[in-house]
Length: 186
Image (cartoon, rainbow, N blue to C red; front, side):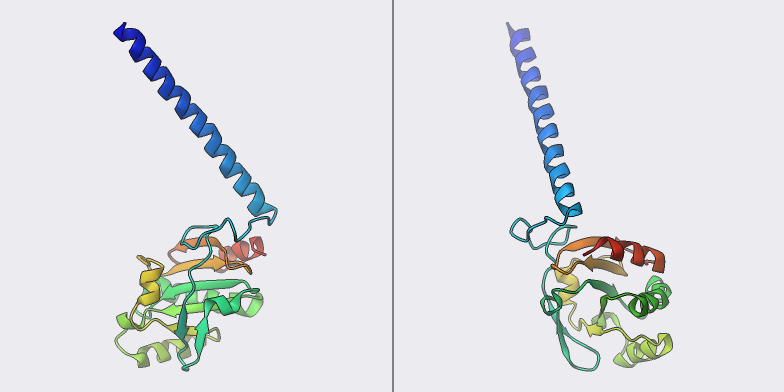
C-alpha cells in the first residue's frame, strides 16, 4: 500500500513538472515571437531591469547643467552607459561609443558615477581627452546607479523607441557589438 501511494505521488510530481516545463516553454516561445514580430505591448511589460522590461525612468543633469529625462527620449533608440573616469574598461570603450554615436541614429546617455570621482575637473578633462560629443549626465548621489542596481562598470542598456530594454551588458562593449544590438532594435 505504501509503495502505491509513493508511486502515485512521484508520478504526480513528475507529471506536474513535465506540464509546467511545457507550458513555460510555450510562454517563452510566444514572448520571443512577439518580440521578434514587434508585438510586445507595453501593457504586458513591467518596469524593471531585465530584457523586455520597460526601462526605469530617471532624470539627471548634464555636465553643462541641462536636465535630461529618459522618458523624454521615447521614440528614439537609447544607449544608457554607466561609467567613471577611473575605470579602465570604461576608458577602453569610449572611442567606440563616440564612433557609434557619430555613425548611428542613437541617443547615448553616458551616466557618470560622479560620487566616485575625485573631482568634476577629472570628468571634464576626460571628456576633452576623448573628444566626446554625446550627452554626459551626472549621477552625483548614485541614485540612478542604485535604481539600475549597477555592480560592475561599465554597464550598458540598449533601450528601443518604446522604452523597452532590448539588451543589457556588463563590461565594455566594442563598436561591432554596439552596432549589432542597435540594428536589432526598432
